[in-house]
Image 1: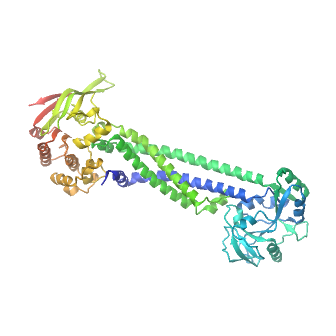
Image 2: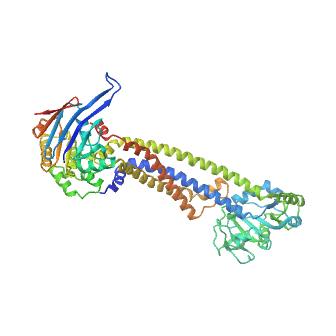
Length: 401
Length: 224
């Protein structure tokens, strides 16, 4: 046995006391790490959404706002299909200040024999698109052919597999990087494929006609980029006046809504972490003081045998640091088992973009949580350590006579 | 090495009573010489344990000084005094002092581990054998009787071969046979050059004494 191993022996041979301290510190690490990962994922998701929403204005049919919130579709992947007259695209392009205007057509597949999965299908025009194409080009650089689809990161179909949509056999040619938004649960194709799918859907009895118009030329949304020097608000109002039965939504207001929700959730999580931290600190201080009182005789004996105050303090700090380290590791591990396998559930419950930070960031968060736990453990034990090192061993030994 | 106390006293304050303070140890001089067994007897509360704690460097006297050789114990820093106590002053306290988390053998070796001095496993084995606790080397304190705990504490002190041994009621929990055994061990330590002070009620202790003192109301007097 060496002096260095005395602290370890003390911990191992008092398993009840050690377990209680490890569990207390584990709770602290769990809350700090778990909370940080959730907040980090929300922030990452928001950044991803911000970078994906390259458009300044999105034009959707007025009915879309009541039928299914476009924002929900974008953020949570809620399936939806709403249409407006395709002529609105030309009308938008005519508005002064519009630099680019790209159409998209939505289609929701069915949970039926004709479809492999119930999924949102998004058709885009590769010639004019500036919203989906740059993203798709990261994973698939060639031209999308007819019945070729690229799938979002959460669609469970691999490249080369076939997805049946209204009995049309679509080939998966690429898989997109995760964005943490509803875009991850969608399937993307060109407008020609979309036309085939719409026709197939109609053959199955699913109508996608624009209610007051029998035209075949229908679109679901127009993504607009405003020229530099133009006021986005003014262009938005101008589009509103030029189009029929449409709502022009500024993406900034959509982002502000998300940002507000994110701030509220981050604030709540931060408050919770702070409260748990403070509570843990108080509980740990009380626990260490109680343990110190229980061990007064043991420390008096060590002083009697020649242990200096500094050595004694170091021994107590070492014990608490070891406990906190073990508790911290246990807490981080438990938080990982709670947070990572349930990412989808957390995302659904929060209803906000949620994208797990990189492995490097998660490692840094885990190390920070461990360091914070060890720091709190050491801080909590330092008071007990100070008090104990000042105890008069003679008096303590005499008390037990 | 001589341990000497020069005009040491210990005064405590108390809230009740006529005077607001009292002397646990009245000013006294005491010298513990190498090769000598000194026995200190007296009634409970007479100040014996307080004196022993002052001599061991655990309790600062109100007045006076304690010298180990030429070194004034209470002029040293805590670090220096702790190291000196570890190497030179072996204390057997009256209260239970065996650590629960360690085995008997680990308890006996503990003082030598604190400053990483040489391996004393052989001495530990020798003293465990001498004090008839060799079969308990791997036992924990909770498994020992009062007498076994006492002998473990004595073995722990003797294992370090300190030049000064201060034992407070070392035979309190022991039967006659083990009492004689312990006094024999202290005598042997004295013969090897240690200055031994035994605080005891036992008549047997006085029979083993080279020098004997009595303490009464904090006052020290020589017993003939």
